[in-house]
Amino acid sequence: MGDEFIIAGVDEAGRGPLAGPVFAAAVILDPLRPITGLADSKILSASKRDSLYILIKETALSWSIAGASVEEIDELNILQATLLAMQRAVNGLSVQPDEVLVDGNRLPKLSMPAQAIVKGDSKVQAISAASILAKVERDKLMVDYYQRYPDFAFHLHKGYGTKQHLAEIEQFGFLDVHRKTFNPVRALLMRQGKL
Image 1: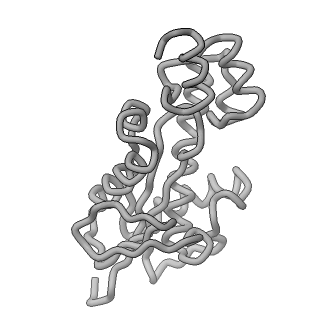
Image 2: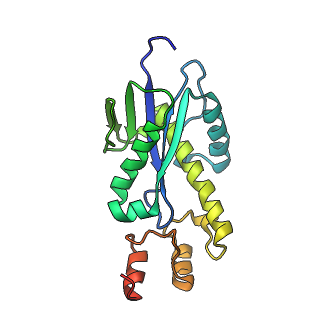
Image 3: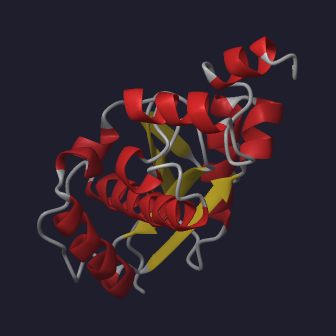
């Protein structure tokens, strides 16, 4: 490595769902090995995300994926748990960045300079790359959940509060992987006298 300024991009996946951990990824792209097609993971097709996920892992100077558990989300709140996952992702990088660019408007506690960039996943390639790693990693976990809990179509709704998911909770109750502080899980628990 020469004296170039090293930037890490950070983004999260899974703030909104009713189930599962929140994931964050940090990526330092290699300027000598540009990746075409990087974009906000939400606008990419699943197959495009999957192929970019492999490419990012193969070509980035460093990458790290971390999470915060359902228990941490319920204990801290989703914002603090997200920031914790981001902090863990940055700390997991094998290369120390000079600056960290984080998608959104809040920063995790970090030991190096950082700035928050609203809609950063569509403006900064390293953040786009991080958004792809975090999303694909979380989606893979949702497929595992579906195999573990076949009554719940986690492979389809990814834990979000869709009509189907709410009907599943109503019919089968909630699982350990559900976030108990999130409505409507919380409302259901209260109705059942469990909160």
